[in-house]
Image (cartoon, rainbow, N blue to C red):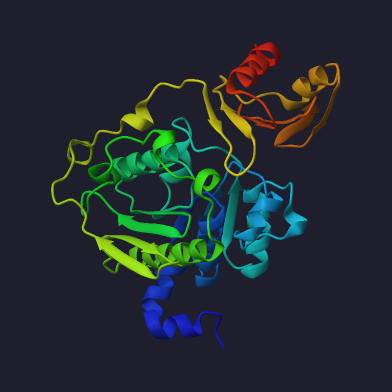
Length: 331
């Protein structure tokens, strides 16, 4: 019996062929993104691009179903790639251990037929929306916090864009996150599954659910919020200011663990061999190098430096201290 026999009975052979030839980019391989990736791999999506900046931590295992204890410390994109290859070896899977930023968003996403949102930050979502507007690629927004989740299929100009609903990213202090409100594990599975279904609808050319779906799994409530009828100037005029924003050094708090991420934009990829040779002479530090990053520790702070210039500081450290360390080491 064919691997996809039951699915083909429902969708039809023609739709299964579309799935086999489709390419989907998934931004974020955490709780919702890893569920989303599993369903798409099992469905037979021909090409998956897995984009994630983070590492698997023990606190992830409560809700991130793709990973187990053997994956702790591994980049999520690489761990997900390995697990998904064991689920379906007949599809193409590419892992990208990077942060989605203006400089790489089009390169990573513009080839996709559909973009899936498994991210945990609005900067990435507004970049996905810009790529969607510029290249007319559908994407599916999804998110979960506490016991609530949301899913919204977006495909401007056929539908409103994300900025029709939310013109600018909210201030961090104004939104709940997994750090402030926690998250119920099962709701992320429900959200990821719903988002995967909407992506499959786009792939097989079926009309997606037009409304923003909001659910609370703890109280068993579900709400369909009608999208704005008036289009915003950004999708009407093709304005993609997040893609076009000049680069700047940016710090952000890590989700679920103490620490800081520092994003910089070097003129070219860092020479990890040269950098690791310099770092080994720093006092009270210990470093090891892999093809993708350097990891080390100074005092009580664990530091990971990626070749694209991104740095993660895990421990009790202020953003100002992280920036000072960057300028001291990399100039």
